Image 1 (cartoon, rainbow, N blue to C red):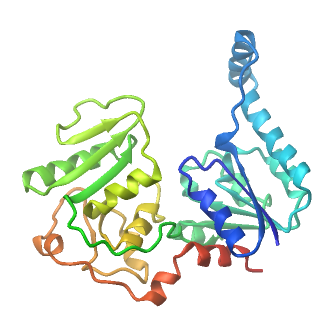
Image 2: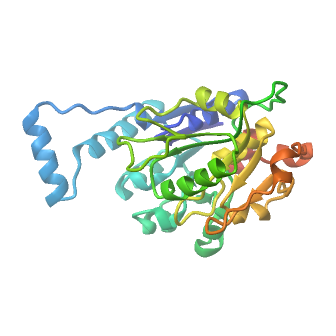
Image 3: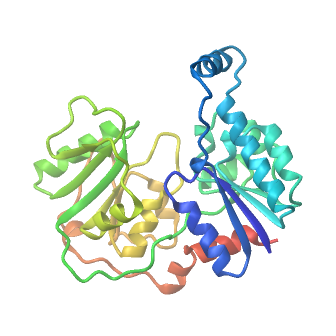
Length: 316
């Protein structure tokens, strides 16, 4: 089957989808938009583009990016299926043009619809199917539910980790919550590696927290997960779906502390492995911290692999 994947793929997860598609015997290629960089011809064009964005809501970078998508599709020709991930950054007109290259145009949402600027694009008729990782959006907007996937290789670690808890997070609405949780860790002498990354160092950053302007690579994050017993997962505002950190924990057999109560609805949920906390009253029992991880059945684990995710996406 000829399959095209379109995404920005800032974290490198989507490239693994392409690799798995090829491994499964498909003719797959990836239009990775984060690799496409438009450079202004001169300062004048930069100024004109700034004015166009304000007055006419037109952005030459977005226009050129969409031209790049259509050029790549023209070169590759008709596809059996085209999959676009988080399509909100592509205009409706461009989606209409993309759809001309396949009878089966599929969207997958890594984000919750309440976080989208353009809901009409997602819930309109731009796509033949729309999958979401958010169970709430499945019910509210009549979408197809499909959680994120395990992208790491299953690995049983033999060495004792250095830290009890790991948190690696961008600086956003979760910052004050993680700060409070870190306070609890420090007060209760729970060892942790807490890392924030962003453009600017936040005000009143705690001494036990590391700040960096550089995003960590997937291999760096995996190394840090391997060096911790528990992963901290804090829910973003207006989001209910499970983040990739949850699936990283499944692959590397790590416990999870999370603020996402929806995790209790999944078949891999086990209170020995997963603790849901209330940010207004943080309590982490010592038993949870000190007991070993309980393995989940292989039949359940396989449901969340990348291979299974692709099988569901491609199903007629």
